[in-house]
Every structure is written in structure tokens, then in C-alpha cells.
Length: 88
Image (cartoon, rainbow, N blue to C red):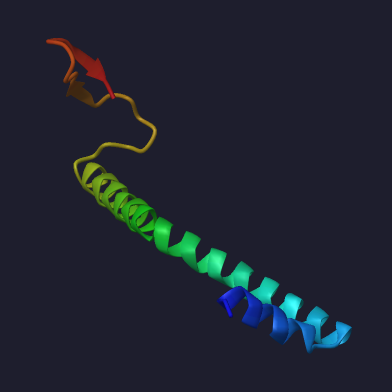
């Protein structure tokens, strides 16, 4: 007897209501498993985004300390792709 035959026999012995309840429970378990998988897959991305937000906040604080106002475009930075300077 194969594993599939055993599972079929288990379901054959269930009433329609019991099968419906079992299917609903399995569907809920599958949804929860998919959510857990997505969360695990994206955990690194979430951590990187949080680190970036913290770095941006730190940078903004340091710029504020030296008198650079938010929204001001007067900070010059070197363009890494050329020998020219560009506005930030």
C-alpha cells in the first residue's frame, strides 16, 4: 500500500462536514506557512531598509550640526563617475 492510498483511506472515513473542516484548517495552515516564508525571505531586506533609515537619520543630524538645512541644495559632492563636481 502506498502513502497516497493511506491518505485516501483516512479521508474516505471522514464525513463531508469533517472533510470541509479539515480542508479549511489545511487552507489556514497553508496561508500561515506562506506568510512565514515571505517574512523569512524579506527579513534581510527589512533589516537593510531599517539600517538605511538609521544611516539617513544620522547623516541628516550631522549635516544639521554643521549648518546644512534640510532641503538646501548647496552641498557640493564629487561625482564618482566623472571628474566634475555636482550639487547634491
